[in-house]
Image 1 (cartoon, rainbow, N blue to C red):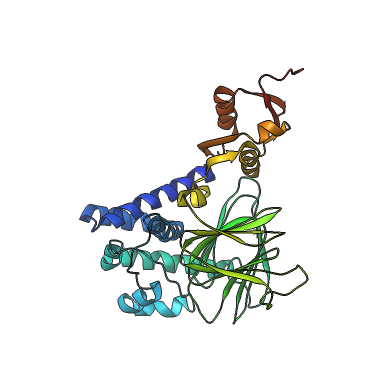
Image 2: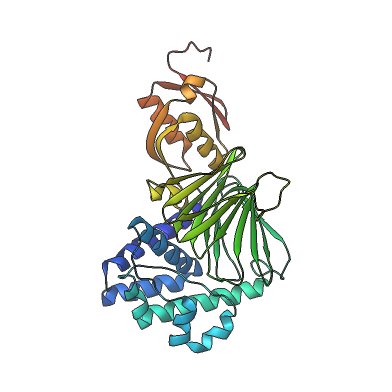
Length: 361
């Protein structure tokens, strides 16, 4: 694992720990100082904490009360900051106990400081995240790389490995095309500009929410971590979206829609929410998944590619939690527990077989 991946994973884990502490109640004086110092280290810390609180709440089946928007908090505690943020309206939901974070002036000051530093840096870059209205920008990640994109409206796009997206913002709309891969969208609420994600023949429109979109060869899967998402499938690739005959449904927190290239939309409950977002800490969670599916996921993250040619072996199901960056541990697990033997064809290719099969290795 590269130093960048280790640091990114560490930040995400630290954010998750702070989200849990905030959910427990009022922080001690020492904890407040530690959190303030941690937030001030990097704007990435702020983004990850806000995302972690939203995800943590969804795991706890969502509290009834919602926190005020960042915009409202700044208006109350530091009105001079509002012009700097401009139109970046963003609402981050949290439970009752998480309100302790926003009641603490030191925490608010720390968050404001980090947001201001990040905003100034983004303006200096001039175009990395703040493009001209209507101008399309394309972002990609290579195998094993993950990337977070804070957008001009306050939304954040977390791109998984081997992902490609195109972003077009106008005065009236926010459009993202998921051209390949997977992304987690933390959407700032703005009814005047719909936030829409397109993936092949699928459209997912956020209603102020956090949701995951995974585009595969045969289908697109939309999973809602928090909030609501309207999902639409075109009648055909030649027909437009928002047509009368298109299939539509609405997903709520903890629901998923599988939209196949052929056939209707299948809506289900998400049994394990951690499985949806585990890729953010570079973990792969499998629950009775076929080996072919597990290998396909591993190959998304690693240059070392695994292949299995035995149909029976490919359909064998396994359960476990694995490090996405360590295919060797998966192979060792399979060899020790499932009677599988591996053949390293090259430094970048491994073949798996049943141990009972006669091999000329």
